[in-house]
Image (cartoon, rainbow, N blue to C red; front, top):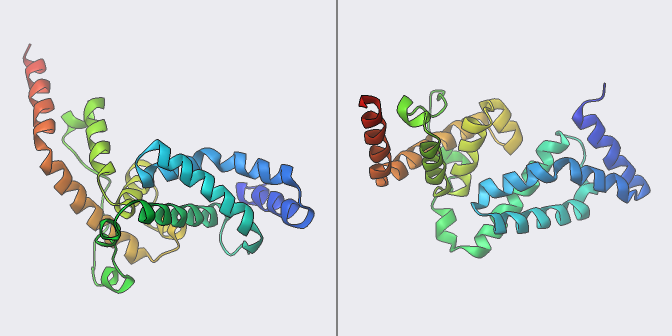
Length: 209
């Protein structure tokens, strides 16, 4: 049985060598949903995500012939969408809003960090869907880089190694970025602690009745 990447390579070859548009359309359909969700995670709103998705597939059409198979097509496409999203966001927002969250590889290497566990919150919080949404809302307030690595690690349950391969970066960089993302998320939650404490009070009162 062929793997997903093997099937991708067959479709890519058909399009690049034979200009088979049906093959390209099938390839796009295979990744349309995941590309949109990735764009949504990075942008934080549906309209921007739709534009990023469209621009990403236009770039795919123009540059698919440059794919050399040094990584899986999924990894290559993820990198293309991420770069497209960052370019889009830089045009829409002041440079400072993105650059202040950016760290060079050397800065990230300086942090010798232990492995982190997925986000741990009080059990009462995780049992309530409303509070899960509050945590997600807090994540949406983070920078695209922070938001991306948190979703990959905590929601998609990817390992450090998998994230490093997907983002085409070093393992230490992933750990550093996740550490900084956790710190930023903690600060965001503390800024809105009244929302969380309110739900906790409701939960405790409900348990007494």
